[in-house]
Length: 384
Image (cartoon, rainbow, N blue to C red; front, top):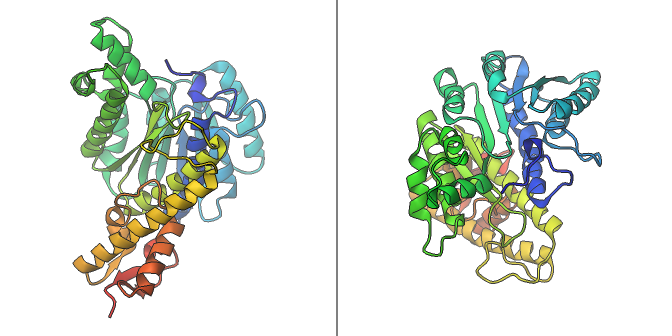
């Protein structure tokens, strides 16, 4: 069962929240800068649909305040932040936080209620300007068709940019799958997940993934990936699914689902989640029960493990770059984003890519034809 408070906003900054909030800190500001440069009036709309109180009781910023901070320090964009919270008591605290930033000149507003009740007006206010949606529910999320309607239609075009980062609850999926497998067809979780997934298709996917030992982790993974694929196909977007855990060997609490139409979005998100993951590892600390086949292996010191991972990632990226230049004489790295990050998406960051490119150039297998302001803008080709 999910650990629940409004918007997943816990009384303490748990490990899975550290990861999620690190991504927000590292992605929202670059996103606003990227899309705001070409937006009318440099305006960018950023929405937190399940904002909770905005700030933890100990003063640590939650997702809502992280977005407000990004809006306050945006230098190349005018961020218009909309924060929505269902629970009245939490909304009142959120409104106080929003008021602090309004007093500093930030364009922000707080709404009380369900996000889908405000979605039409939010999208209408963002007409013609980029829109970033952060949806972090506790349990069942936004109905599939409501979200698809926002991403499709007029916002299907590449511009203005539309991106989504949402929490797809693995705990909720496991609970619904457990009820389904037990024949509890009247269980309230089943129609709730039907609405989130836009149909009953997830039931077959979950049951097919259910192993002989009746473990539900493969079910949650399979449903999250299928959900992402369906939503991406329906809306003409690229979808990325990231499992998020409390501890290394635990089952995911949720999967982060990221949707974008831009190769730049894919690249910057890769850098953001790789750096957020390192932050999560450092906050989690070394563990004594790690095994070689774990998703993340730990040694005695987390920094040593991160360094080892980065070394392996540099080698893989160098190989990826070598393959790219055998196929194309001249290419900007961002145009080959999937090929650059193949096998290391979520581990390699911009520093990794720069180091790998330096190795390839030094050994003479790749040449930098044009140096970009950012590593992703650099143009490479065969050496010689």
